[in-house]
Image 1 (spheres, rainbow, N blue to C red):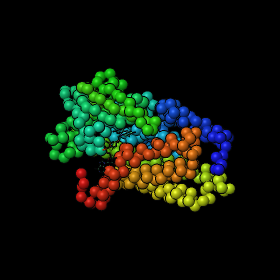
Image 2: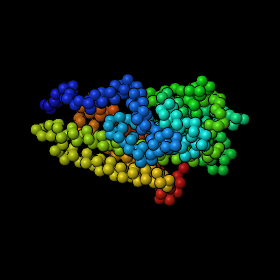
Image 3: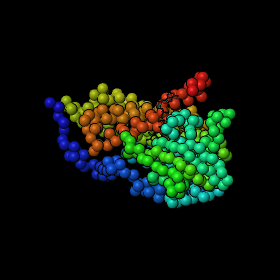
Image 4: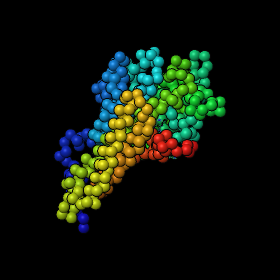
Amino acid sequence: MADHGEPLRRTRLGRGPALRLGGCRRRVDEARGYPEAFVDALTKAGWMAALIPEEYGSSGLGLTEASVIMDEINRSGGNSGACHGQMYSMNTLVRHGSEAQRRKYLPRIAAGELRLQSMGVTEPTAGTDTTRIKTTAIGSGDRYVINGQKVWISRIQHSDLMILLARTTPFDQVSRKSEGMSIFIVDLHEAQRKGMSVRPILNMVNHETNEVFFDDLEIPAENLIGEEGQGFKYILTGLNAERVLIAAECIGDGYRFIDKVTAYTRERTVFGRPIGQTQGVQFPIAESFIEVEAANLMRYEACRLYDAGEPCGGQANMAKNLAAKASWEAANACIQFHGGFGFAAEYDVERKFRETRLYQVAPISTNLILSYVAEHMLGLPRSF
Ligand SMILES: Cc1cc2nc3c(=O)[nH]c(=O)nc-3n(C[C@H](O)[C@H](O)[C@H](O)COP(=O)(O)OP(=O)(O)OC[C@H]3O[C@@H](n4cnc5c(N)ncnc54)[C@H](O)[C@@H]3O)c2cc1C
């Protein structure tokens, strides 16, 4: 009969601060709560405003540094999904917002008075085909009136502001399908009093995400970001940043899984020797380590190009793809070689396993990345 070792609680004792931190993250996960204290601490320390330029009250760091922050949160066992929205939405406002918008919002975000954590793009009927969104914003004097529906819009209940994509010209009246969409900055508190309603979606990970309904929501015309009709182009700046940051988070997860599984398999003794001595155990771990390291190189290349203002769509997509696959391979090795203990919440493997799985579907699915690379990097015919 197999030796199942000591009871769970006794095997985990003696880990000190790591256990206490793990316990804190686990309690938030079990309660399906929001890590309010953690996000507040990150904000107070200035990390959440890293991308805000110095003249607006922060450090003006690049995407490279922002990606290190996200990477470290995940590598330490946290989940950047609770707060990464502010990082990837920020450049949309910094790069495309007017001076008046930057002055109005950035210093207050930098001071931690406002959170810009939400981005509303996805719709239930359009899905990945963003150009088919049906949410409309109709200009009327000094206002836009918004009607429609979004789905999977994250962190609305823990944000003050949202970047919203809506059609300002109907699909059948534009010469290119990517035209006629605009982005707006929406005050979420005011919107919820004036025609926006929110319905939470219970999901596989502890990730606050929602259905959102707009019913004649009026917002000031001055909330339009950039030129009307060019919103899709602007949102792509944010999406490239998002892909690179998600890559960094997956890399953090990947290293976390590898650290945990190597530590565990060095110690866990079955059949009279550490299981990590067996090549059948070593090889999947070594393989996923190689993949995480390779993904990390592509992530830094994408960051370099983004920060230099050069086109980086290919590298951002490839980094995201490599990293999401690598973290998933590492997750599988980690849970597999923890045996039954990998399924115990107390070991903090199954939570990360669930969290990292998301990134092959959202914010962009693996298939769509392959399609981007085939078309834009290899010149193959467009398939849709
Ligand atoms: C937890 C979570 C949080 C999210 N947060 C946000 C958010 O804050 N803001 C936001 O705007 N969105 C958010 N999303 C939405 C996310 O970006 C979408 O779920 C994702 O882009 C996929 O869109 P879809 O779900 O409509 O899938 P669909 O478009 O229906 O696609 C389903 C699957 O079909 C395949 N597929 C579809 N089209 C093609 C094709 N042409 N070629 C090959 N394969 C194809 C892909 O494998 C894809 O995974 C979130 C989603 C989740 C699950």
